[in-house]
Structure formats: structure tokens, C-alpha cells
Length: 128
Image (cartoon, rainbow, N blue to C red; front, top):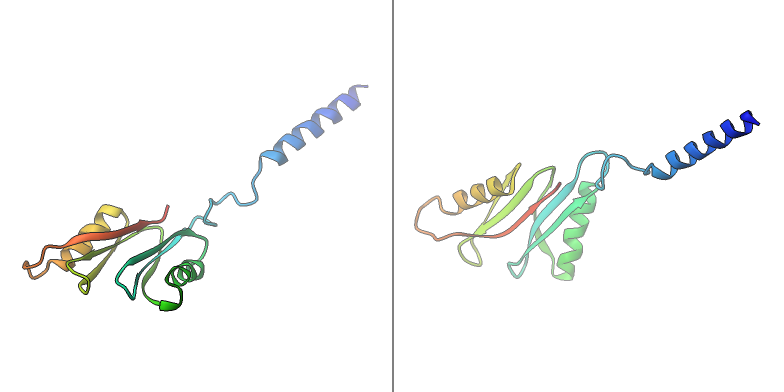
């Protein structure tokens, strides 16, 4: 009788353990890396993709967003942030860094290098 009880406890423990395990323990993005991408449509609108498992999937997401009109794929990146700064429709500058604030600051610094433009951040995206 004691052997049956111990077998039952073992099976109960095993069932609990297996039901609490997940197939990928590395996170939603896979193996600890999340990929993102930033682009600009032909109409000048920013487009972004974030928290995807591969760089290829991030690029594909940008292309899906742009549709048949196409777009400029600015950058595919992992485990960081990207930002777009601009001063008009044609003036577009990009920044990449570990944080959203640093990526925005880099893009703004590039945009306003000559000091005569008033620049603003039009898009930001970060992966986890």
C-alpha cells in the first residue's frame, strides 16, 4: 500500500512539474534576443516592428506594413532601441542605442547638427 501511495505522489508531482513548464524558457522572442526594425514608407510615415524572434521576421514585418508601395528599411536591430528624428518630410535622421531616450537623443543630435533646424522625434521602438 505504501508503494502505491508513493507512486501516486510521484505521478502527481510529475504532472504538476510538466504542466508548469513552458516550451521556450528564453522569453517570448526566443533564446534571449528580441529583434526589431524601423523603416519609413514612401509617403514619409514611420513604420516599426518589435519583439520578433529573428531579424528576418522583423524585416518581413516592415515589408508587410509598407505593402506594395514599398519603403526604406532603415535598420534591423536586437536588444535595443531605435528612433527617427525629422525637421520636415524629407529630412529624416536615425538613432540607435540601448535605451529609448539615448536613441532619440542620437537622432535629434544628428538632425540638428547645423543648428538651424527645429527637429522632433517622430517614431521610437525598443525590443525587450
